[in-house]
Length: 300
Image (cartoon, rainbow, N blue to C red; front, side):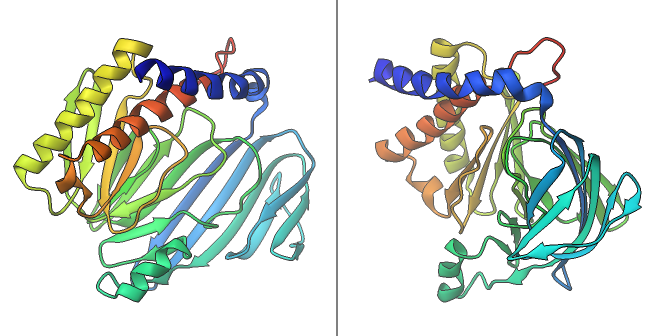
């Protein structure tokens, strides 16, 4: 079974890795800065894209209100048609925008069901930004993100390092993804954070309901999965592994972050759930380890 898993994971990743190795040094850099007004449920954002190689760009902006666009410090007209923003720019573009975030009720069953359809929403404890919350452009990019929120929140992302700077009742989170991805998603949560270090890997567990015994059981399975990986594939490629308990189940596109629907943590005695947890931890790590280019001079 272990050999079959290894063959499947490696064969999938090998084909994709060739393209990324050749072209990753030309990828654009996407800098996003957002300020979320939780009371008004409004996001104010500025997106700055650098290292552009194409002059004709198409951004998906379905849910966004575009306020202004600048290219090399010069303001340019806003041209939106059928939810797409079309630009003809060189080298660098800055887009200022805002987003109204929908509110969902954690206690309402119909509201919870809508979460599969609604990608950007606020609940009493969480903020999910997994849809069109910034001007999206196709292709791999390096992302740098700053998020300003009330200090009671933690930000959960695919990144290895998330820096939190608290000033009065506000917190600024700085997130840098050192590996390129297609799309950026973030979660903000009021849930408690448990941190444990294992083999130079920071295991972050976000949960409000876990008892000590259940938490220890989950951490045991996570450590076992890391051991399995290091035995067969070498050093684990991520410095951090984040696991978030939520009423909303969502898989990120990058290793280092897993979701477990609320209540699943208490079912870790089930072999099926243990297998799925291990498959996620190991499978995503192997896939993206092989996708990351090792080009001389490239910072990853």
